[in-house]
Amino acid sequence: MVTPYLAGLTPGTDDVTVIDDKVQKIPYEGDFDLVAISTTTGSANRAYDISRRFRERKIPVVMGGFHATLHPAETLVHADSVVVGEAENVWMPLLDDLRRGGIKSLYKGDSPSDMKSLPRPRYELLDLSRYRIHMMPIQATRGCNYHCDFCEVPVVYDGAYRMRPIEDIVEEIQQQKKVMGINQFQFIDDQLTGKH
Image (cartoon, rainbow, N blue to C red):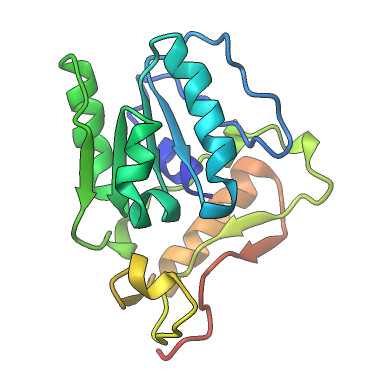
């Protein structure tokens, strides 16, 4: 889940709402300055519909994720802005552009995000009561060191495989236990057991 990580990067002076469309209703009538949607190809049409509803109200929409990275031209038809690649390095410039009066149509996360400086994801912004299983996602690695023909992961991450320092993972687990009160974690890596 990318959006809680982006919420962790967003300045504390900004109000942030995180919605998981699988378990919550989208607050289409909400008063938002920006809507950010992360999508895979399998859910792209649903993401486009959500985007359309906000854009009809003149609320700018930025889309990212695997689908937007692999199909930016198509995605841009349905959004005001597209993030290609990893969003962490372009999120603050995008927010700065928004504050100055307008976002660019394309932001490219050309360089890999520093796995050592990922923010604490703000899962507390999700309504966890809507989930049957209370388990916190955690990311220890990004990418994959294999290059299977059928998989988009090496394409999205340009063949790179990166690992977070163990100390950072342990610290995030401890922080999430303290903030969320949850003791179960699930690794959401594309390839957790890659070559180290």
